Image 1: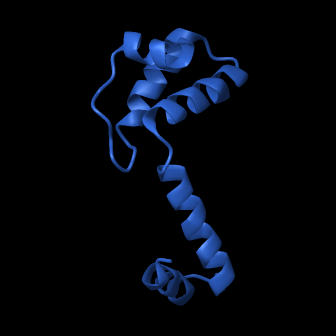
Image 2: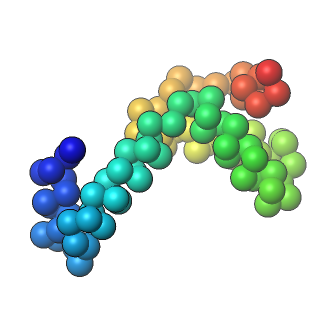
Image 3: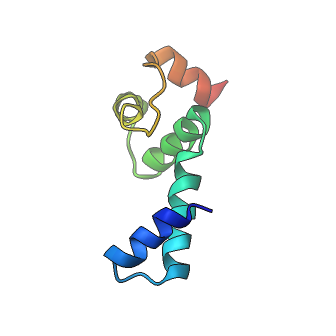
Length: 85
C-alpha cells in the first residue's frame, strides 16, 4: 500500500519502514473522515476545551477549507444540523 510514498519517507526522514507505513496509514485515515464525522469530532474537541458554540462553528467553518478535499462551504445552520441532527 503506497510503497512509493513509504520509500520516500524512509529515504528522507529518520523513520524506518514500519514507522513510515504507520504514518502513511494514520494520515490516510485522518483524511478518510467524512465531512460530517469531521464536524462532529471537532465540535466535541473544541467543546472539551471550553469554547462556546459561536466560536466552535466559526472555527469549524474555517477548518473545513483546509481539508484535503474541501467540501462546499457550509452555513452555520448546516453545521448545527450535522452536530445536533
